[in-house]
Length: 278
Length: 299
Image 1 (cartoon, each protein chain N blue to C red):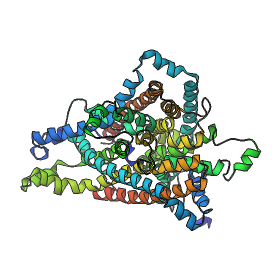
Image 2: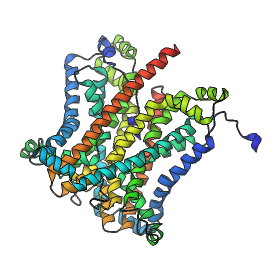
Image 3: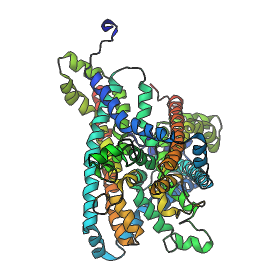
Image 4: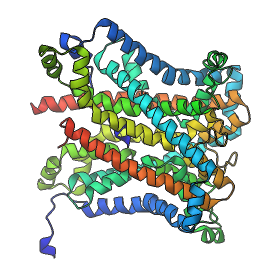
């Protein structure tokens, strides 16, 4: 067999790959496997009962619905922000560009209490919104606001590099051929941006579904109204219902795995569409 | 998943697009887009950030300082620093090892490995905490063995460190893999042919090429390690003065209606976030310069 081995010039293959696999198995894969093994302690019927209990189903509706909506809002406004950052010059642009990453850097708990303070009855924004009948803090709308905050950089940062790489020639050609500006955007620019935009959307969505810290402060956490799925896991844990918590966690994990595969596919598509693949 | 947060070497493109008729919008369209984009930015990013500092100082400097020198706050700061001090180096070593294996060698299952490294990003922080409760908790796999030997992991510092390592796992690897893949392995191979040992190759050839990407990954890891809330909250047990990190301390103060104190501690974390963003911009700037240098010498 030794003769069949490929000759490697660089050292360290066994060491680094072995360490990578060992470290990852110990800290990530085996602990994650614990979720599925623990779930098998429930019979199928019990499992279905736990994960389809009305209170839990209400959390899916909120978590998935608000996350989809937040990702969609981010796709629209994130694209505009990326567009403004790439194509226009305006004072303070460097600061705006740097602060786009704030949701990555700001601890979620801090974001949560800050948003709550803004939208509470006597907050900067809440004092104007509540009199006209828009309650944000402690309602599902508050959940949406927190998820928009969390997901914003994903769309901007996936779309921005693609916009920067665009050659001006494409648009010049479109204009020469008589296209209006909007037609150029719709038929020339948008198709190039679409894979990246969808990747950003999916990343923001995936992050939003699992988000906990920034949401729980502003949500108010009313059962059936403003409870998110991750909170349901915490609630079950606090009641020492480990099996129930694990069953819901396994549903969330399956969903995460699926999204991860979709995102990988989208990223490959982005690379292909923009010629960034090797 | 952190695809959105990788080091990108963008410079200012506005001039290129604004100078040509074909790539310009009418002033009305331009100012509308700009107004909507910046309005959205102000509403969702700038205002929450400002709110933290305004709320923190609402009751004056004294209340602010009292909240920060409170023994529970100090112990939370210590624990947060400790968790970061352990998890950042661990994930740094892992990130370099993983990137070396993936970028310098061909082996079956490479693409799957890259996907698996991303996994912790797509797992909810709450689930990340839960997995360690299932393994090390009282009813977990090693629960009875641990309690027989009087070792506490869950509701103690080791659990907090484990949860932090889990959520910050991919950052450095994520940063280095695309960078090292793009750089190839010719330089390293040349060094080996010229007689360099493995470590010499790494220190003198690879490291100078990846240092900015590495720093970028470390900064992101550190910010997340110090700010993690969900995962740590599950494993901490919230014992004041013992197992509370800074974000958990913020939560406790907030839930006790000590709003000014909560925002005072939160402002520390917000400052940390701002410092992170400043260093990040600086690293990006340096990386652009280094990249231009290398292009100049190449041509």
